[in-house]
Length: 311
Figure 1 (cartoon, rainbow, N blue to C red):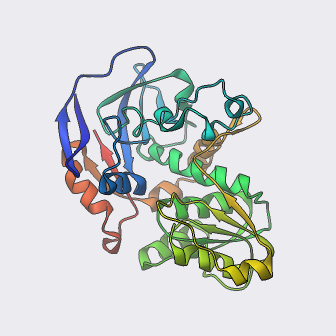
Figure 2: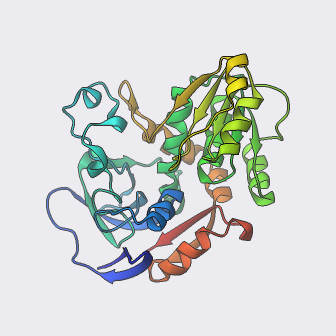
Figure 3: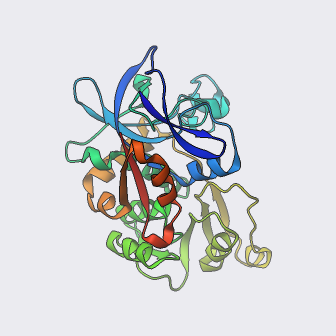
């Protein structure tokens, strides 16, 4: 089958054996290119083989599914309490990093990874379930509730997913974004321009300025949610921290609250609001054009938000 791989710091399309072994076979219909995919490619960080952790597809009987791209150990103290996002097994549990991911024609995953989709959710947008789950999880950790004033810093996929999730909760949401097309997307999802103080600041930019601005916009005793995956040290303004006493909330991936997974809630939200997919997904490429797709994913000035590969 055809699959994407990284060779010498470049994106390549390869012929590889079809996956085999125990689990459920999924025919991939779309795989999103995440900012972390670009960072991994640029850094030379070694992955197991095929990248791609944002994915959706069809089962053998035609059932559409999204995929939660993790296989936690299930036995460590964090897995047993539902916090499998910090499972002690490390990156080997993550599809697209420690094991083959979804930028391919097929994948085999355990039954637990399947995310059943609402009937109203278009399979063409279903790979957004994964990044939306990141936002759902982060806002849950930050304790977001109806009526909270929330400002999101950064208008990429994760930032816009945070806008959509916060609006769904019933928060009053603002978006601080760099590019006009990101601001327009945020407005379509229900965000206005930042002004005043906020109960929660969401840094989805992963930059020094993003964290700084997030702290500046907080009310005293507000919460700064670090939602982005930063590859560098996080720097915060000391005097602002001292004067406002904010709570710093970090977040990674997704987990479950009781018997409900964040990713199942994300699938419901995406199915309930088709505007999310219409606004965030801006470009689609066939798998054969993976190199071009990755190049496009870097060009924020060209109006890009989310780029999908569609085998």
